[in-house]
Image 1 (tube, rainbow, N blue to C red):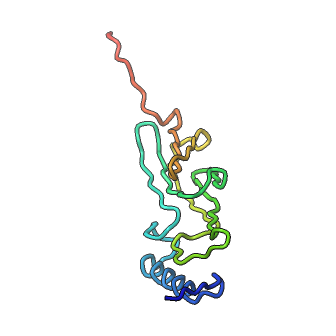
Image 2 (image 1 turned 180 degrees about the horizontal axis):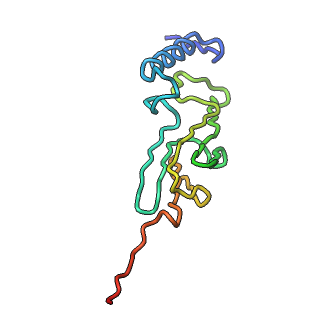
Image 3 (image 1 turned 45 degrees about the vertical axis):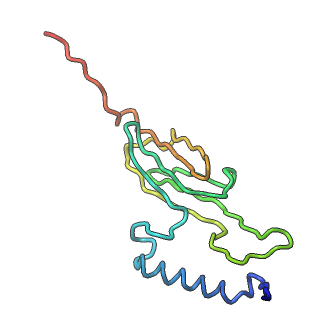
Length: 147
């Protein structure tokens, strides 16, 4: 059996796979970026709240922390970065499913969060951003005094 090596820019299969991904994306989210996030959006994001505020978990496998940027502007949290995927020296891809290049995701947050006090960490390809509630939005215990 003979193996043929195609240059990525001349590979006809890559063009067809790109077209297939775009068509699948168009059918799954006909409103484009105006609708809710769906399958195929990169990077995948989970957002949940806990007692202290919100936690955002972002899947960023293969991306070094210094390739990520997190920006808070008002109620908007933007996560952006670059994923570089290169074939090893002297080698070529036989299958390439992970995308490469720049990406950006923006999330709208509730008003009661303190984006300026957010903290981020990256472990095992998962970026975790913790955004605490503003002090005035946190529940307070009120003591009852006997009259």
